Image (tube, rainbow, N blue to C red; front, side, top):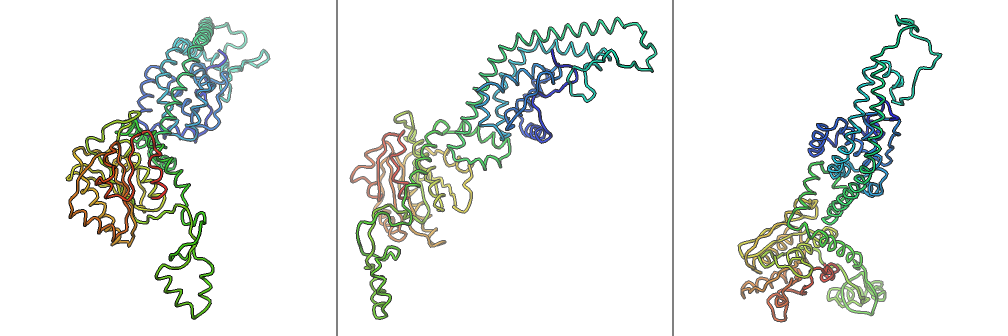
Length: 521
């Protein structure tokens, strides 16, 4: 082996800030501590190896030391790290881990099985290297020869023939050689050579293991990043989370009720964002003619001439009050809602049913509701999620515009399921009461209620009268979505009578079936 005793123990060069990041991350992660305890119990240098792998994943430009710089007992670590870093798969992994201690730690844990196997492959070389180091340590002269004065472990410093002997050495130049020391040095050299051969023999296995492990870790890192994006968890929010909290969140997202539908949720949110970008908000759109009204932002210039004549100002005021001013007519979609967005989501037993692609009615409905949550927050509007089934089963989740939504609260809303039958009156009554309270407290009107259900249900005549009165007073709109239930959206149905806008969805893989909702809400 080219390396000597007393060289570097770490294969990846690091400064004190890097070492602090590792120690702090390790302190926060029970998984890392358990892995370190397990591996160091079987392999003396495993602790240094975990540090190296973490820093190789975390640092923007990791520098792997030359083998000659390494302590002989850490050459197996050096080979493992070198093979990892030089693999294309590890380069792919680093796209997700650079600068992110949590992601780098998750990479180490994902690589744990491969690290165990690679250490086992190099066990023979490691044992021989430790034997060689022990033999050198037993010969003080050899140890001096193998280590530089500055302790950098170059292993190439030897006394030249012209060096002066130590005057305090009682034996002097004529001292007889020590047979025991020579024998120990010979055994150490033989062990070092054997270790080098064993490591060379282990390299092909280590190389293949490193590439496969890095590819697996890269897939895991990408999947977790995509999972967080699908659920709308921002990078800034993740950075503020403690390590264990972020790990628990990732586990919850992977194992929750809607875990397998995260891709659908992400597509819904992307679609809603795209529709928001297409909306014509507070603009007149394409001019197509002249109409009558009271919108001063679209008034025809000739009408303003009336204000220049005192005798016509009263006429202008009267026409404004009657909504008879001449206005430019436009063709375009405008955001008309101002009050809260309320999503009423059916969670009766029949919502378990799956449609095309295996997507359940519940998954489609919840994905749509989460996109509506994004829509409300983008517009600075309150959002309320109402889960309902039978008349006595209602669960309300409030998301005020002035407060962070919070991923934990969002997950509680998405994962809750009530079961049972279906009642229209119960959730719609709660929704109307919420909009009435908003009007009383903040004088906000024109809220939007979205009713997502897969069932037909009757309502009483008295309740219908009260419902219509509330609509007239508060000016809210009602959008209906019949999920996998075309009869509920048929002409003459109760849902049609209650809604201003109604559609039926049969293909649950199609997020665009509700695209127009996000242009008008």
